[in-house]
Amino acid sequence: MNGEFSLIALRALLTRGANVVGVVTFNATAPTDTVRRLHPEPVSDIPLLPRTPLNIIALAFENHIPAFSLSSFTSPAFLSQLNPDLIVVACFPKLLPSSWLAIPKLGCLNLHPSLLPNYRGIAPMFWQFYYGETRTGVTLHFMDAGADTGDIVDQAEVKFPDGITSREADHLTAYAGAELLIGSLNQIPTPRQPQIVVGATLAVAPIWATARIAPTPKPKDRLIPTSWSARRAFNFIRGADEWGPFEIDVNGKRMKVREALNFTFGERMDEAIQEKGGEIKIQFADGVVVVRFY
Image (cartoon, rainbow, N blue to C red; front, side, top):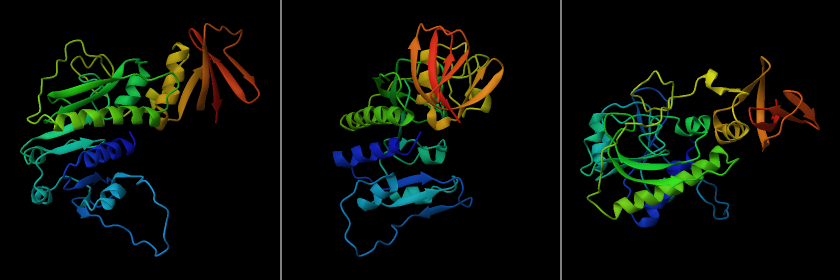
């Protein structure tokens, strides 16, 4: 997911009046074993129009909040010095080690864009669109040593309309998650209940009998078979677009998709593929998807 998920969460905390003592981001390309304090870049003396911060670091600087860039989990000394009562995680690409989880006296909360225990892991949006889910949402839960396995605080269901993009889906779940977060801060100590995994939807191959995870997609996961329903294919191409480009297998030939324009249910063409006016119609199991290829 993009950084707007965490940006919306931080903005909600600030609006509520929370005393945010630090913001931490992860930079996998930085030198290892470093925790770097970030500083605002110098600005010119030319007055600028008021603007809305475009990322979480800019929002932190605007509110005089210390910001840090992390490349690996070394000593949590800098975190201990911040002395947080609570850690809130949103769209962070790594699991927090036990040394971090033990620091805040109220625990660590995570916002996850699925209805846990379904679709635990790093790519929940991708797999929810991949499997054609129509009912999804966001979960606020306590963090433990596992990947999205901690006790649930609260959940909110979010309905995605046909054709929603990944950025639009991020916005819907982020705002729903922000409401859950603010609600939880109004009832400390925060209620919690264990996750029940019996019957939860698998986000990967069924051979993982007890898994409820959504791992990083592999190239084969981006191949769309024409045996899918037209609605599923259309919504997957649009909703998981940040993981693209995707390919459609048409009569044994893989064609790279740039975007999906619309779909029709019940339409049956004489051929598997038709081209007209720069748009291409692909026959799926129960209808047609109109796409543009690269």
